[in-house]
Length: 125
Image 1 (cartoon, rainbow, N blue to C red):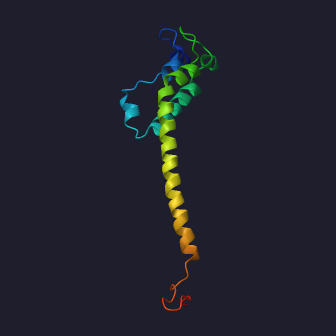
Image 2 (image 1 turned 120 degrees about the vertical axis):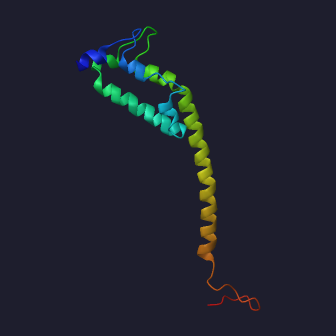
């Protein structure tokens, strides 16, 4: 019974091809915050379907000549680009914050406890 369900085809698309199709207005994907996490969820879904279909289904082409993996890559290209941009923006923000923290830690590491005497300029211990 399981093989029959996973072998069903719609317009030469098998179950794995269908998992590779991205529906932008899908509530399942839109409930997940952030493009990177959405992409992760889509990839997890694809891999789960890949696990249950017949191994031949992974290499089967549809009417347009795409394998399921090619279909997934083609349909998720925009999501991947948005995720890439988000990751670069986040990385540069973290780099700025990291540089500020390192600067402050450098100053603190060389600061003398108690400071300097204003009259003599020597450290107060």
